[in-house]
Length: 213
Image (cartoon, rainbow, N blue to C red; front, side, top):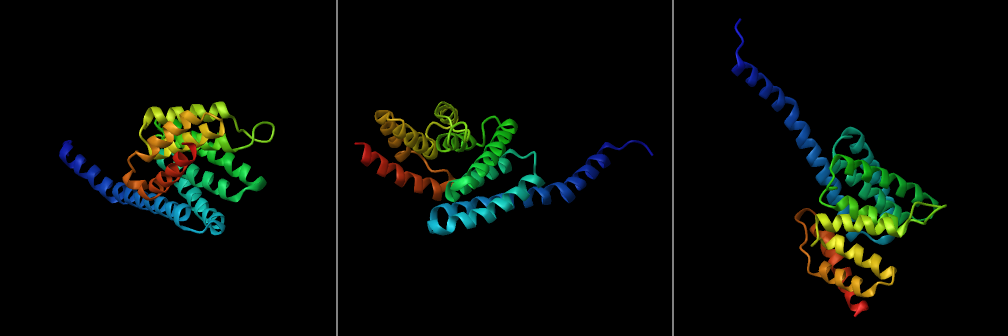
C-alpha cells in the first residue's frame, strides 16, 4: 500500500484527541482547582484552620507534581503551597517545608526561566527573607533581595511583587524605598487568575503605606 501522508496525519490527530486533549484538560482542571483552594485558604479561612487545610492541599500538590513532573506551573504552585504551609505551621517542621518549597520553585524556574510570570521569584524572596539564616536555615537577605529584583524585572507592576518587596525593605530599615514599592502595590493591577489574593495584598499594602507615611 503506498504511503498516504493524509492518513498518517489523521491517525496522529486521532491519537492526540484520544489521549492528549483529555490529559491536558484534566491537568488544567486540577491546577485551576489547586489555585482556587489555595486562595480560599489563605484569604478567607480563619488563621487557626489554615495550617491543617494547607497540609491537605500540599499533599494534593505533591501528587500533581509527581504526575506532571516536567510542568513548571505545577511545580511552582507546589512551591507556593508548601511555602504557605511553612508560614502557617511555624516551628521546626516549617524549615523542612521551606526547603521543599525552595526545591520545587527552583526546579520550576529551571523549566520556565520567567518563573510563572515572576511568581516563583516572589515566593523565593519571601522564603529567603523569613527563614532563619545559617547554621539553622538558608535565610539570606541579599539572596532575598536578588529574588525580588528578578521578579520586578519580569513583572514590575505586580501587586504581590511590590508588596512583598516593600515588606522586606521595611524590615531592612529602608523606609523610603519601602513606601515607594508599597504605593506601587496599591496601584498595581490584579491578575485575573489571582484576583482574590492580589486584592488582599493590595489592602495590606494600603496599611503599609499608612504606617510608613
